[in-house]
Image 1 (cartoon, rainbow, N blue to C red):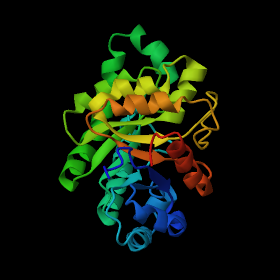
Image 2 (cartoon, rainbow, N blue to C red):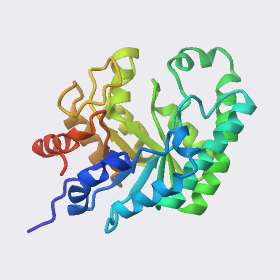
Image 3 (cartoon, rainbow, N blue to C red):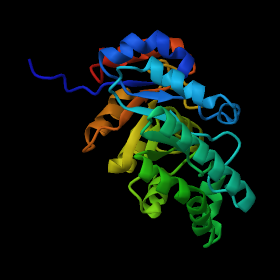
Length: 275
């Protein structure tokens, strides 16, 4: 029989949830994204390497791709304050330490672009260049180290209203270790609440820079992280946009309720979109 052409779904999980999903992950060698190492209390804990070792132990036999969500709480990668940028560089370095310790080959970082920026940056001809310069100052050391480690940094849309802004930023870094992520729920929030294009447009705009997708559903009002099918995202349009790409990005189910990940996967499989 011919191979199933549908893409295989991965999952975003804290390390503590890996045992519940281990058999399901290994059966199809699904991609995994660890979500512990975005928290300051984890990064600064004296036993963080023990946590990484537990992840490696629980994923013994896993040949799918491993990534992690990098730190993002409480800061922007394009802060105009140089002292804040120094803190962010240190946090990103800690995230890359965790990549090295776990064997992760991808790390998610958050976009600096906000709704306020969309409406205000073009009042001052220098403003966009300043955001880019601040982001370069923060990201370039991490991007160079990531390249040496075999890790790709993927910039995820958060409040982004124009999906091209992140693409321009990633390309301006000039390194293959910086690519893009699309979070379908964030895109749908921006579409419903701020007039951004729908999620499939975000995927099309990212094009072959797209290396990672967070799959979650919303009502277009808040960042719900519901299973697909419970909000109003048009999933056939999302997967049609994905099908136009030369390389399928990592497709990671990211839910608030980790106990419903298999339900989410079964819903998308039932639509014939993934497996």
